[in-house]
Amino acid sequence: MLSSETIRIIKSTVPVLEKHGTDITTRFYQLLFTNHPELLNIFNHANQSKGKQQTALANAVYAAALHIDKLEMILPVVKQIAHKHRSLGIRAEHYPIVGENLLAAIKDVLGDMATEEIMQAWAEAYGVIANAFIGVEAELYQQSEKQKGGWAGFRAFRVDKKVKESDVITSFYLVPQDREAIASFKPGQYISVKLEIPGESNTHIRQYSLSDTPGKPYYRISVKREDAILDKPTGKVSAYLHKHIDQEHILWLSVPSGEFTLDEHDSRPIVFISGGVGLTPLVSMLKTLAETNPNRAITFIHAAQNGSVHALKQEVEELASCSPQISAYWCYGKPTNLDREMNAYDKEGIIDLPWLQQVISTKEASFYFCGPVPFMRTVNSLLKKWKINANDIHYEFFGPSGSLEDA
Ligand code: HEM
Image 1 (cartoon, rainbow, N blue to C red):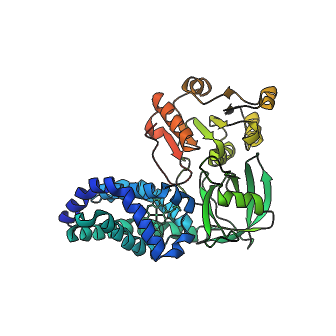
Image 2: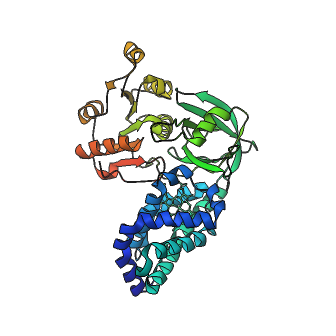
Image 3: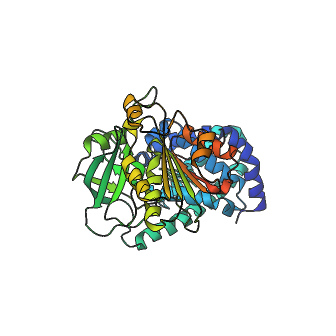
């Protein structure tokens, strides 16, 4: 239990944290990786270099500090992060390391402002926050070990099949090397892939949504090759998977995790809106609902640049053609001449509200969307303009979570 004085100090330092939050977390990562270079095997270096992880961690720390006397208020956020942590293999023994370096970073950045009293309060508060995460993560680890076909850490999977889905997206069908059962999952969940790339000193871990239904003897991931564009470098891991990982190769996977899943008690119409590779969790949801809940009205909307980068199109069209409950619509940003000749899309340009209102039969529905951040901002603001109830809007970020509010 924190004393009321400690709580007061923590809350009064939130504005300072907000001002210096990113400086503190940037300094924190410098210290962390200098003192514990082995942690470079866990963190995503691309997110680090773009500063995304710094912002995500800073936001989590502000939220925790603001609610330090009622951490249960931020339990949904803790749970979502805990899923990511479990997927990465973060353990209780990592927390003191992070705590020590975070406190040192606060001291470095705040200088004289960081009095002994403030540092002591933060040390206590970090302990409380860390315990909240450790508790939730311990439960998740237990679940994954107890679950039929579940496991802890990383397990070897063999690439059974590699299928090109579009010019930039390729699916990998992964079966366990030990030929034992694999854990079921909720559509929308992801796995982590741990990869050693020849010539690189650290291992790399990336999350990929499962793109097929649960209950199959394999997991399927559909990976976009992240090519270099302008100041964005090539995605090391996705390029390696596309180029060098073939049938019979081994990949190391963690157990399915994640909180972006369907509400099992909801039977209202459902609308899926995806951009680019953001369609992968939504295809899993669509296919699962088509099997388990064939009477549910589903609208599936996908936005892609053009037909050459539109993955899993046939899979979705087959479902839609077999069920009067499923409607699918394609929006192409820049259709090719072939797309035009083939009449391959329903809308050209970007998704707008009049079009959404035209293709979605009722706004009394649940909305799930996923895609690149600018796309998600657009969709979020359109749904808000349409006055869709916030509780009916569900989305997932690929990469560290951020905010859609600046739409
Ligand atoms: C991811 C917060 C402790 C390693 C994250 C994210 C947040 C966060 C907000 C982003 C989640 C998302 O993208 O959805 C925290 C907080 C902690 C904590 C508040 C302490 C109370 C730790 C510890 C480790 C760790 C002890 C292990 C050394 C990671 C890694 C990621 C992550 C590797 C993924 C980031 C990436 O590689 O891009 N954490 N974390 N975290 N966390 Fe933590």
